[in-house]
Image (cartoon, rainbow, N blue to C red; front, top):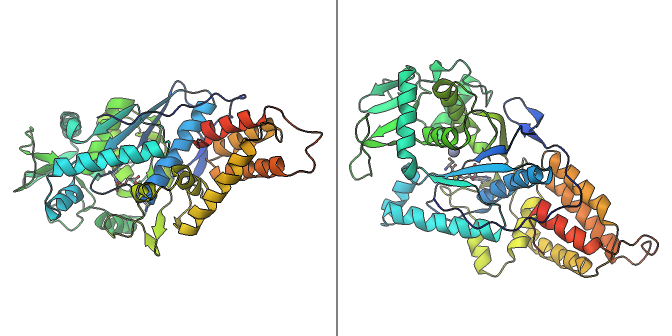
Length: 411
Ligand code: 5CA
Ligand code: ZN
């Protein structure tokens, strides 16, 4: 699948430090310095509705990891999927009487435009589930050959007990797993399963739904196996970082990890990074609840996408927070101030702020601290006192490049 076009990333005057990020599996900060290129897989959208602020926060959050790695001198191989066939997409297509392929293409295109407007660096491989069906089928065959897949009526399940490490990503107790599995697309109650937590890998054809030929009969892939197979194909085993929102910790990333252990004999990722949930009107912003603020609606009302991005940066990627319109207007004011400071040419010294921002990002993507450092620089530059003896003639140019390269804000 085509991704979106890449914004320029200006060079920085000094390299950033090694990058550390919080790992859900160990609960610790981990140094994610790669051997060669840094490999990152960020779970993509299920394209049945427009990009909301929750999605945007997650993708902008991990865009900072991409940028922090680049600042530290690493190449980055970034892969993202598109779940372009799945229950919620098919249900929405039926409800609004649109062909499911058309719906998926339309919403994926809108997502590309939103990501471009927000200056998120595109993945090197943007991969749809439908185009990956042959990969998924051969991965299920690997799992079957390892004795980890069984048939139930005409469907096929992955057996979680085939992986002794199952549970290692989330660390959840079994009771919590059962509850969350049911909430997030699982079917713990289905009679005949070997373990209620086993997840479907191939769903037999259902009337009126799309299906593909396979050695398991006509049908379509389950959700988790899609990301397992795509990540293995494009990144290989044990890549640096698997990322997504915290609602993907279990079962999604747990299942990907187990399917990798069993099918590829390798860890899925070395580090599992998760973004907090964005709420609106007191509840998690979600397509199914409908409490949404869309990136495209704001863009269509002439809101500067850089102000949207700044609001997102002002919340640490791991925190849960609630979208407030007032923060958008305050971000617009902040950008006016920053642009004014940047227009002066000379200003407060650039190098200390470059270092502070790169240190903050390398320390678990602390964008709020980075934003505060830029804001302090702008205040010093705009202030009249104290600068006379300590003016950096090249400050604007350097801070401009810093804001662009490290934070993805083009001013
Ligand atoms: N296609 C799957 C992943 S393979 C999926 O979860 N799609 S999604 O469209 O539902 O979500 C896309 C990404 O946005 C996921 O990483 C999800 O965790 C994240 N996300 C969804 N809602 C929110 C929210 N309210 N706040 C923060 N992130 C969110
Ligand atoms: Zn995924």
